[in-house]
Image: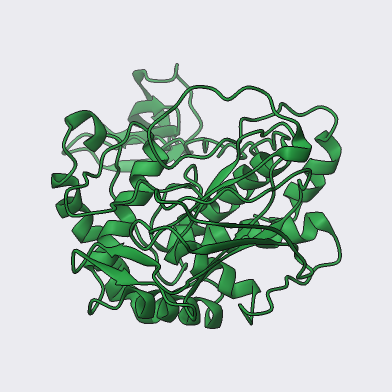
Length: 378
């Protein structure tokens, strides 16, 4: 499927599409926020290797590299930088600082997130109607961002137009999501339900948030050692080299899928456990179903980014082949009678009669069906 068609649909339907809700996931549902002026609109950003402490710096950066929003995480590990009237694509960069830590879900300890540590995400955008946007910044979003951003210290995204950059961003996010087996309906940018301490429980009524949180917990448990920052950096490097595929990490993605069953046991309620589905990873992105999932995910992301519904192309129906009729075999003479020859029916089809055959007018039994007539010597 040609991903470029989605941009064409966007311009065609920009005045006709239905506006979609673009609020974030990432935790328990709260009351509906009252309308806000877009000029004062903030975005809720949740960094996650496990839950973060206060003090991590969160920056919003344009594709050309200008920083336009800055905030630090609070005691709940969230930051709310000013997004304002920005509706197009942008970059989110999370940078560590002295005293900043995150909950390591593998070692069950609070680990430092130092000044040299960074996590990135690339965002297609949020329409003006999305008054309470939110995203998560995780090792998975970092792996996707690395495809487009060579230098996290000076992040830029090349592109000649906003729609082109949006499609690039949607595509890299989709590729990494499909590598790990996420359903295309779940955005890689969803705020995950992350664990913040040894007493925290992985529970939520938000399907996407819980699914992504469970995946990240399984990813931490699958790490070769307790250095989750090193794991995130390694995934980003491999993703950049392979355009989102992780062929060298095939064992890791398979282990993550297997460990998800263990993670599910830690979810306290049956209702919440039922929200999490199994993962079908494709680390090489070689399956036809993966390419279809990427295309679907790109369409969903651009719809959410622009507020325009992108129609799913109707598949061409497979025609039902007309069965070839089995020909009726020519009738044969009964046992003991010799065939004199065949010809066209001289009696009603399916009938049997007696008569003569040939110049010598030999007496014959005549047997006829749809395929012809046989004469048998009497």
